[in-house]
Image (cartoon, rainbow, N blue to C red):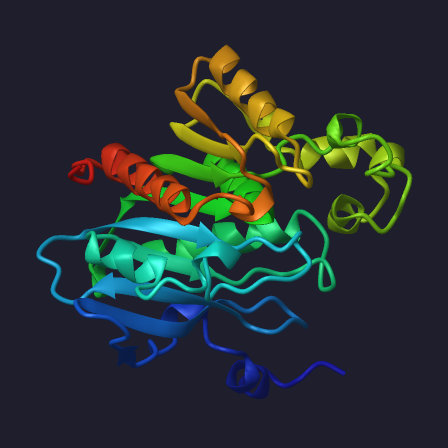
Length: 301
């Protein structure tokens, strides 16, 4: 039985862009953190939230980094950049805010909640929320960079290839789900299995649903209009082979887009096996790329 219009209007949740913002915390010098702002409310699913890191006293509208966490689309948290950054005394998000960026680190629906393209729809909705609140928050969303690691790099690349952003930082992400099985170590990947991370993402084994796998692959969406990309990928990655980063690089170059591909010698997935100073270099290279494509200056040597 349908509800009376007055009751339906009363019970309807407010649009996320109209909700009050969370109170600001001050977790590091020179930074503000709006933790847990609701940016989307899919029907029947938990509200989706983001953490927004901001400089304490910005003078001009801020360029934006949209950060998307990894975890095989199955797990993960928006509160960290990846396992190698958990021990940093100053979080990487705080460092980016101190460098003059607004950083929106996102939740999105995991594969236990929904299959592709729900995840892309979610991160796209986050861009719309940031646009809607840009004046209120002092953001210049015309200068947005997407950045992600692993599964988050996959989503960051998809978002950059389907939305108007200035650039994309992709750390060791899958880029072509159809070739991942053949590029993996012998016996390490069963393309007929319904339980791989990729099968759970698209709702079917990769081998039996090639069209779905292609649609969920960043390489499929590359055009000459792609923004600049920085792709960092470990040479010893046993989970997402280096060939995945090479494949997206080739597709971007063939389309005439700008891409800076940097294999990271000796690095396994999530920068495992990499010395701390080299993890720092990966972070600084990514920050410098974000500065460059949004009109800032590189980090001093």
